[in-house]
Image (cartoon, rainbow, N blue to C red; front, side):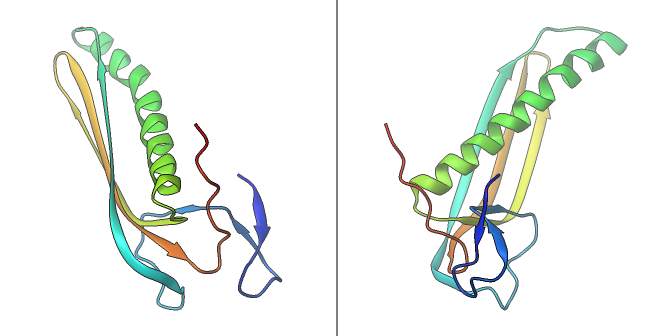
Length: 120
């Protein structure tokens, strides 16, 4: 993560984007209204039993979480926002799949730098 000077005060260092589980602080200036962000990831998994099944699931989970985070950060940039609050993720494990869904409320925080444009 890259830190840049605060746009509001210019004295402190802030990240380029925020992904937080808490609600936004009252003192944070947010422009416009919030927008729902949602990311979904599905991964097939091999069927196992007992301890082997737990190992198979635990091998898949870090990659699922990484993909959720990558999608959320990309969607923030696509919507032109730089902060997401109220992040919540849910993971469901079945016999054949691991499904993860993450949601957050995105906004444009005045103190953070504007998001970089998406290049295709």
